[in-house]
Image (cartoon, rainbow, N blue to C red):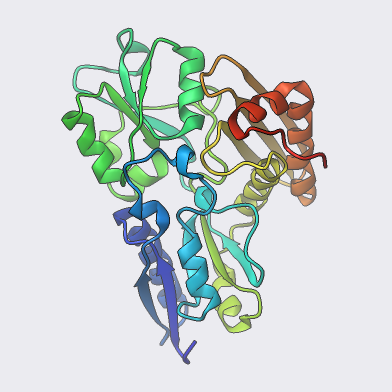
Length: 315
């Protein structure tokens, strides 16, 4: 990195650019004279838009090319949606900061005339590409017809009308960041639809040996969010899951304690194993692993075998 220049690698979607610009603005406000440049990078997930993510493999689809740019020195920092980041990072890279979390919940955007999720007619058509969302909604409403829906936030909102859908499911964080909060028909309670691992938080990834960048970034780390996301990611890591599997978890931090809730569901929603665990924030990783082990013993291994073709390896 040249003196007083920091290059951020980002996807080119409207949401990714909002996130990268938010980080850029915070950095330039904090460090007088620092110039921050955005470098747009197209990822595999951006190129393949006609296939459900679960069929092309969810791990690293939206981050791999940006990580390669980090490793070869084309950028100094990557700004990711934490829910897109695999639990195993390439050698030489680290998630240096986790920013304060925006609303972690999922929301539904419904066609005109439908007030809420419970008002959907039988066999209503709901768009989402997430197995996690499909499984949980089908658990409560097995009559729903789930339609695969890919694309950025704006594309999905447009397809609600173009494809004659009754509703679509999105992350609250993305809609709020882009100014589409008025499109939200209903926020789905965490007790009803557990969010994706890391949903609502940003991850700032850089090279482990880049102390200059570390010094610039560290003020952006939000400890409570960091502990919560660490527990969620440990849960996902033990289950060997990517971002497109019927696995969900959400951590809540109060003082020096963390409560983690997690679930594993069958793709059709008929089986859903869910529980919660609590402990000190200093043991966030252990807590996530322990909850995963509990669910595996209670039948999650069999469910994941159906999805992956094999059960998670023994610890």
